[in-house]
Length: 116
Image 1 (cartoon, helix red, strand yellow):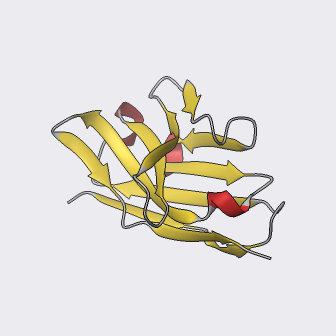
Image 2 (cartoon, helix red, strand yellow):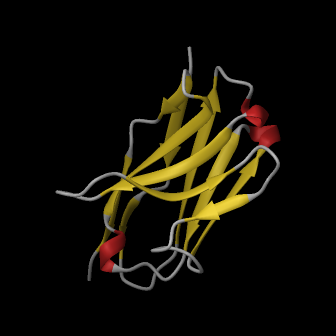
């Protein structure tokens, strides 16, 4: 059974830093492209960042230069460090593990709220 468990969300102020973690089980983690997506109320889910099995990364335009994705294959964990948080970063953040279309899994989502 595949599980993706997200942690690290919460309520922060603008300009703060937050680190999300997603730990996977039930998959060969190192083979998977891991990603973070987010969905704000009334908006479509969007890519935040993803990291490929070779370690290369791709960050969405809205977060480029502020957020950084990384992975630790020994811990089956992907991280998202979010710097300089803005009000518009408020959303539910989802972890995704992708190998092929038939092998794509989602976490339950974790709330990040940026508010003063």
